[in-house]
Amino acid sequence: MAAQFGRRLRKGAVTTAVAAAAVAALSASQAPDVTADTQERQSAADAQSAPDPTAADPGATGNSPYYTDLPPLNSPAPVPSATVGPTTGTGTSQAGIPATVLDAYQKAAAELAASKPGCNLPWHLLAAIGQVESGQARGGRVTADGTTVSPILGPVLNGAGFAHIKDTDHGAYDGDTTYDRAIGPMQFIPSTWAWAGRDGNGDGKADPNNVYDAALAAGHYLCRNGWDLSVEADLKKAILSYNYSQDYLHTVRSWMEFYRRGTHEIPDGSGSLPGNRSDDHDTPMSPSVPVTPSPTPKPKPKPSTPGTGKPSTPGTPSKPGTPTTPSKPTPTPTPTPTDTVAHLEDAGTATLSARAGDTFADRISTRAETSAGKPVAKVRIRFTIVGDTDATFAGGESHATVVTDAKGVALAPALRAGEKTGDFTVRALLVGRAVTAVDYRATVTARTADALARTGDTALTCTAGGEFADRVELKATYKGAAAGKVAATATLLASADATTAADKGPYFKDASGKPVRTLTGLETDADGVLKLPELYADDTTGTFVLRVTTTGGATLTVELTVTAPASSTPTPSGSPSGSQSPAASQSPSA
Image (cartoon, rainbow, N blue to C red):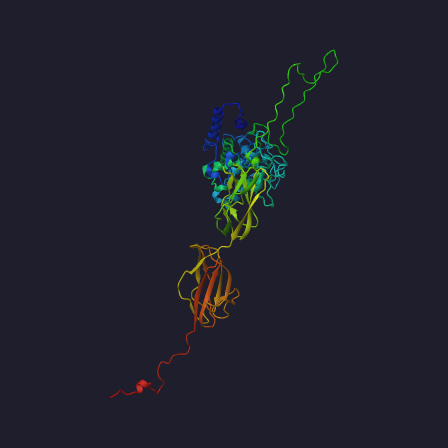
């Protein structure tokens, strides 16, 4: 029954009105909260790293075929049946997910909950996409580490009923050096995997044929652009960005809700395999061999004519005078916008420099042009951060794919500097065609402060051999704002004119308790505050100076006073016996 509901309506078989009604009915029965986008487009909010669907963007899968089978109308039982096996047709067997595949989905969702908590990615969504894309890795036919027993490949994306995507990986993933094909249990095309791929099982490589790697990559793909998948509008955008089809959206939502109502673990390799595909083929996607059209069979020779013993010639010759209808030439595919791009060039990007932890003030801008210098709109530019840096694009990714506008310009998301200082490169590449990349140099400088001030105004005094009662506390600012994590140095000097540390007077203590008069490696906290260690005084009295400097040149000089200790000789309480003070010995005048 599920297969009958799942079969996609064939072209020309019904009217548009009937097709729309059928989709609406399925949506209402399977996922009541799903509503169709009447314009069938994503919103303009996706313009950053999610390609505009009007640019015929292939999404994660190249808009490859997917399984259209829908879950049973009845909610699944949360407890598995003892007879669950690889057969189809029961709600219990369809609700079961192979153990390793289920583990991959749940681990990926847990990782995203930690790294991108605002995304709110449910593992049920990954399971729904895995079901629709590959039937849960062909029923869980994976090895112990999550790698599919044999590659799962979609059809050749040569434009014959599918997207037209020329080879981007030199056949490294899909074995095809002419065109791309979707690969693995989550059906990524090579050009998307190149930036979205992740290592989900910790073996040091990102393999699209491994369900742990593919599930984690799918999670990051769905969580880009700051989408919150607990919000209906963002959930729709994310699913449509994976494969842009309203039918795909409804099918994934149906399975997602089905799994939310209850699912369970089944042994690897025992899952059921869907039977219906969106390209109207009833056979599963190829495990490893390319999908090629079957050759036209040659006509069989006719049996010999009775009484003559002569075999008839194959086929029926044309009658004299009847012209033979020439076969229609194979149409030449219309060049895509990507095919017309001759080169990429910088579109006026300013100098890229930022302090550690700050967002770069300027954004990278790249233009795609034809050989005649005309801009090319609606092509994808992939920006990749290269080098030893922890800088990222907005959202925490090291890659971003942006569609060029009407002027042929792709504006990369804002860059945010990490804590590592130095130079790195951002490389702009055309997706889908080999043209020379454009490299942009970016520099991260150390955090700085331009002003230092004490947080208190208490005089800093101490008696010789004692300890200063108050610790010195400062606040660093940069352009009026708190300057956090700024490096600083504190030095004790004999006077304000001194250039080297004093050899006597106030001092700090090192870890072993020995006197030190220069402290390096100091750093302000997140609020720009720096609290120095306790200060002590030796037996030298006088006025000394504490000088604190920060990266960026901010300097503050603080005066320290060391006084002599009070005298320990007791003061006499009266005059010695038998003597009088001079004043007392004088007689008053007469």
